[in-house]
Length: 336
Image (cartoon, rainbow, N blue to C red; front, side, top):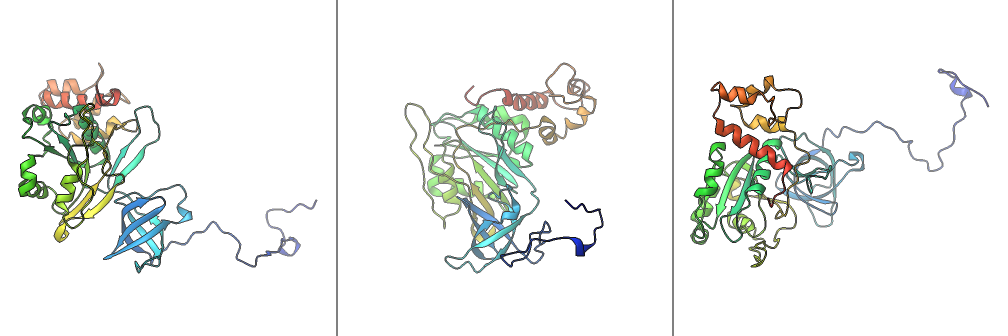
């Protein structure tokens, strides 16, 4: 067999003819600099509904993106038929860098994280004060996911006519989280919707909560032009609701005042992916104290420098307790 060096004479190289007559494959991919910018509104079995300027366009992910998946809220580059006409299909060729991500795992033993929402500014955690009973550990997990992903949390407490909010608010008072407390009657006259809407102006807000708390009902009221399935049945035995939202969806608020992203009701929220060093960034009064912590410190061990930081008066002890309570949810199940 003839061997060639690094710089063989091209006339000596035998090439196999291209029977198909098309161009040979190359690793050089086009940059698609003229691609249009869009936002992913929904994802359904490989089809992505995107907003391009003022048009709703159906698209698929380009093969060149490989296993990289686009999620609701992603800013993407799109080429192809962008008319939005029926039976047309465009291609997503690039997913732009994300400013924030809401991620979860199926449970704490699952190493595969799933991005639920991208580029949201805040996470509205909706929970009922009764029917079904509030689940503080699940709220803690949502807060950890928000801090880890770069979202500002917002507590929305519903059904306060059935139970007072004081005890739950006291539990999160040291975290300085904004909150809105509503009653069922206030949903009917619009007062609750108005107060929640004040917290959403000019922001992209992801709504999350376990089933039966009134999350989708609230979203329906906020975006009256886009009615979705409303309240689900709450099982009298288990105290759990029925899912009424089966996939995430981004919906514009009236008068272009922002975006709401409704997500499916939660049964669990795994935190296998969370790095404590990212959560601490949401506590600016405590973060400087971690400089003396040992490597890979969990911030809840004997050598943690935060104890001395608080003892020296740099931060409130209640804030350190809140941080450690949140981080400890990574070791506990939601129903604890």
